[in-house]
Amino acid sequence: KAGVTQTPRYLIKTRGQQVTLSCSPISGHRSVSWYQQTPGQGLQFLFEYFSETQRNKGNFPGRFSGRQFSNSRSEMNVSTLELGDSALYLCASSLEFGQGLGNTIYFGEGSWLTVV
Amino acid sequence: AQSVTQLDSQVPVFEEAPVELRCNYSSSVSVYLFWYVQYPNQGLQLLLKYLSGSTLVKGINGFEAEFNKSQTSFHLRKPSVHISDTAEYFCAVSEVGNTPLVFGKGTRLSVIA
Image (tube, rainbow over all chains, first blue to last red):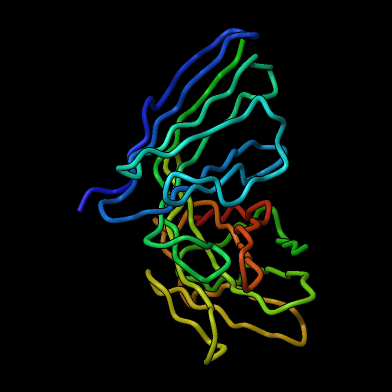
């Protein structure tokens, strides 16, 4: 069974540009979450999608957005990139909605974004 | 809101020695607790989780953790580490209900030959 797949794995963008990251969950998983990982802040929750609807959102500015498609695949977008957006962006999937319900989430290997 | 404190940012230990990675959490309601491991240039992998029941939880790769409600702790232990255990370990908590996981800052375990 294939794991969570994230593309691209590495990318470099310039300040002010926008970026779209893609995530394919494990087959059969209906919930997708996104996290940002940086050395200073650690792992921070961005948002969780289930059935194409955003169910939870972390404390990030509106430049960070996402969506989920009917096949559960998800994308996240960051507009007007800033240097501080350089990070590893991790996608995770679970069978059902609700990390707070004890569902195990499975992480992809992440997308490394560098903003110059 | 819940929070997690991993008390040690780095833990060096000799191969075949025991190790304990400490985790304390703060929450006013019931919680679920998790330990994840991250190997270099990889995503996070679940080691074990506590949902309810026995406070001693066994996970993969010989790791175990004990939930202590009175001390609000969930320390991770392994009786004998291997070089391959070198990685970053994250403790995470979610409040029972509809809240996402909150992660600690991580503990870097370095196993020395």
